[in-house]
Image 1 (tube, rainbow, N blue to C red):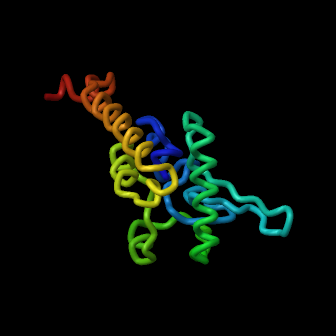
Image 2: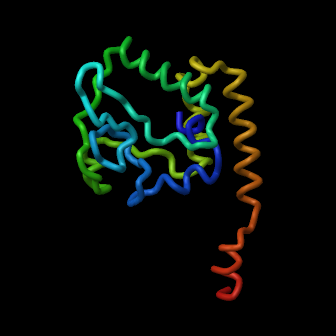
Length: 157
């Protein structure tokens, strides 16, 4: 799902620990690093926030995969893990089997291509074409030398 909710190279630059964006595949009432936030669980006032989508994402695709994920969880009776009320250390995450969002576009593309669920939801053809376009984007990005790289390395090497 990350490739849909975070479709650009820059989408992943904000998804790093220590900032207000999520990194952990957990839910919470107030933890900034959790992917899903449920600030109030109180009948009709209950709301769920998916905290990762980038403003550059296609809202129709985001809504489609979010609804599909919710329905899939209901149909398969998947219960969420215990709420994460604090950011977890790497060792705590490992111990509890908690994963993180992809760290970059390349990792998101690989996960997307390996997901039979995404192919079922969005269709095989769409997924193949979308992943191809994103791979080309990643390749163009990988071949680009940024100002930061020039400033950081040119005079040191």
